[in-house]
Length: 128
Image (cartoon, rainbow, N blue to C red; front, top):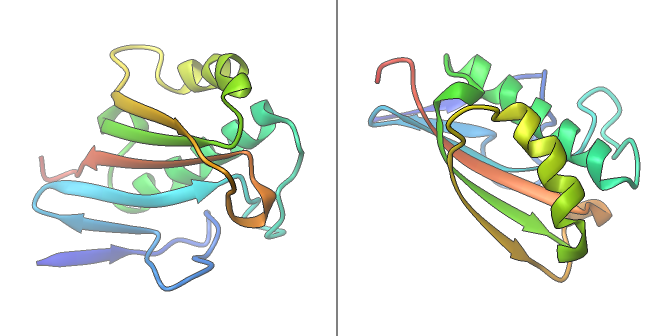
């Protein structure tokens, strides 16, 4: 069985996908870019601002699913420029200060809406 997560506290899907899915004790959060859920726009071209917005969007989806950033076990990060790796990490580590999740980071040619970063995560659900 699976349960779809929907929240207005994170951007609505801009394609045929769910914000998140709960299945078998895990929450799978779709890739999030730094869209402000109120405006539907990326608030700044700065990687630090976009990274913080992405992680706040993920936090909102996890909360709706009964989880939290502390329960993230794996993240996949997509950056349009690996030169942003250091400033990205400076923000990222504030959201995962202790025992951060396993992670992969890759450089990609483009992201939706001209975003500089996209992150998807897998977390334990409240039923873990």
